[in-house]
Length: 103
Image 1 (cartoon, rainbow, N blue to C red):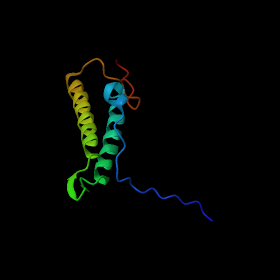
Image 2: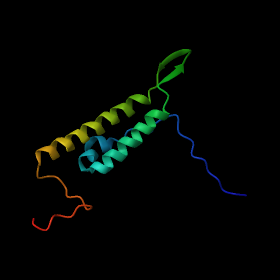
Image 3: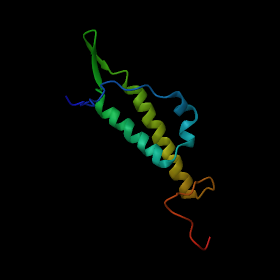
Image 4: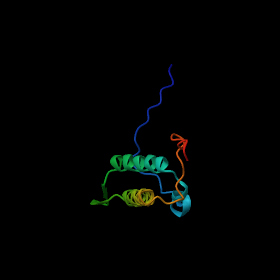
């Protein structure tokens, strides 16, 4: 007998981490922010926007935290882009691009 597990998408989202909201986004790299944004957008695609409760159609309560998280990630990415275009000193060097020999 084979041990096969199937990963079915969840129909409900996980709650937004308070640590990420409070300070975790400030320490995330651009790559981590993009990965988190991709994850949130995948969750939004899997989460039904409308649900039926007590015989009436309503907005799924799991959607609001995901949209909030998405806005936070986009805002932080915009901050990174703005700081890079201004050439601010707090930018981290990428390990993929070593400094040029003349610097």
